[in-house]
Length: 353
Image 1 (cartoon, rainbow, N blue to C red):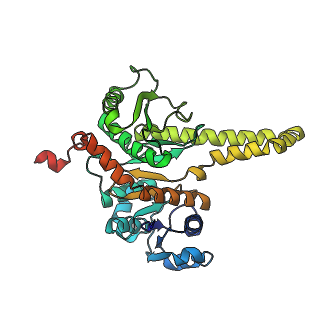
Image 2 (cartoon, rainbow, N blue to C red):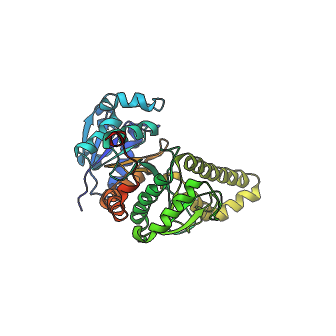
Image 3 (tube, helix red, strand yellow):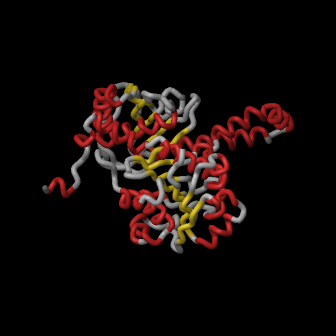
């Protein structure tokens, strides 16, 4: 199957051009049908491509001088969107010159530019940032929102659940994803009114949405492997995500310190190395890299700024799979089945009409 090409913001991330090009080249070696629009400083991109002739043959360069830094505020980024590598990559999606965009740049700027350029899908009030987290089960769990919306109402949470379920069908292959709302307890009486309202709506619409909804989950249970989609507001989601990432780093650092504490421990490390390597692989964020903004009229994927080439390649693979499986069309179809427009907040001009 021939996929639309993927626009890559070659200037984003902590390492910029070198890692982004190396990651795209790695993705291309794994999937030879990938084609790219590399956006950024042309001389630097060409220099990086010298080491990757396979990628060079399947790519076009779109030159731009300007770059959005990690310190730029979203408002500043919006004013310069038309001249920056991030803005031009997203504009390529809108113009039909690319099927999707990948950037490792400033998250706030990426969200602002993507939302203004591509607009939200019919039936969706706000886009949400969704990512895959490792679990003890056979599949990763999808969690959203992870920071795009710090305040949400029950209608937003229902829309997030619909979008996350469509993504879960792509990522896990499960026809009826197991969906839960993140809460401080699993009992029906726990949580805020908006959480309970969202739960009631999802419970009533579960059959039409083809999901398995069983109420709430707690933060310490969301990676056990018995849930496919965890839905929350962006404020709680971002805190939960960083807690998970911090715990993973803590465990890794603690193991390294323990194995280095004595000669006996070092011998124990050598004996248990296959197990520790498996743990390292499972917890490595590069193996789960690639958060997607769901709810836009186009696919935009955020790669972690500190990702290595393997992480960038994984983000590109996530992007390609979303394109191949037409995730935006899946979301539209799911919304239509439950009258999505009735859950959508009217825009200011609609209220005045």
